[in-house]
Structures are given as structure tokens and as C-alpha cells.
Image (cartoon, rainbow, N blue to C red; front, top):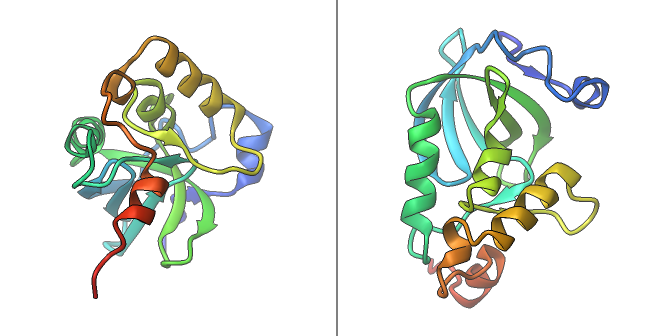
Length: 159
């Protein structure tokens, strides 16, 4: 399998990972504002949950707008993925890069997602969310916006 995902050590060494400029995975499906499916250079499929962000669910206020925003950024594009391991659902946790653009950060900065992670969240993401809130960008201008974790707690999936 091709190594398109690079470890967290590269992220700690520099702001823009070495993989930027040499994208190797192709985005095939955008599921919502924080989950995509990619094919690597060998055709293997990887479901990726964008690390450090939480976008509204499809049935939630701003869910469609968030998903559409991510689609406009990455659908059909080649991306570099900085891996942060796997979540409890077996999805790769990663930060998406197109050239020098941190797509996860863009989603938060434009008001399409919240910062996710109560313990030591990424300071760049926190700063981006604070600015989006202050300037009422995206979901921050929608009075119905509700943090996805709270929405999921109030709307559990039915078997």
C-alpha cells in the first residue's frame, strides 16, 4: 500500500507537512462535512474522518451547507492526508491538504464545522473557530446551529 498518510511527527516539525504538493489519494465520496472516502494510488479505499473538527449531521441545521462546502473543496481532487490514527469506527483520522491548504482548518474558519476535542484541541483550529464565531460566518449566523455532539445525543440513531 502506498504511504499517502504521514505521521504526527511531521506535523510537529513544521506547519505544512512534507506531503503537501504531492497529493496521492483521490477523493471519491464526500459523506458529510467531516467524512470522506478516498482511493489511494493502488486503488484501496479509505474512509477518512477529518481530525479535530465536527460538522453538523445531514438532518441538522447547516448540515447540507457543510457537506456542500467540503464537496466544493475536495470532491474528485487529489489530497495529501496527515494521519492521526483511527477512530472507534475504524475510520482513518486525518487532516486533508491540497497544496498548502489545510482543509480541516478551512472548514472551521469558514463556519462549516466546530472544533472537536475537549482535551488539548489544536490551537489553530480554536483560533479559526473563534474568528468565525466573532464574524458570524457560516453556521455561526444561523440561530438554529447546534453543536453536533449535542444534536446526536438528542437524536440517537434507531436500529
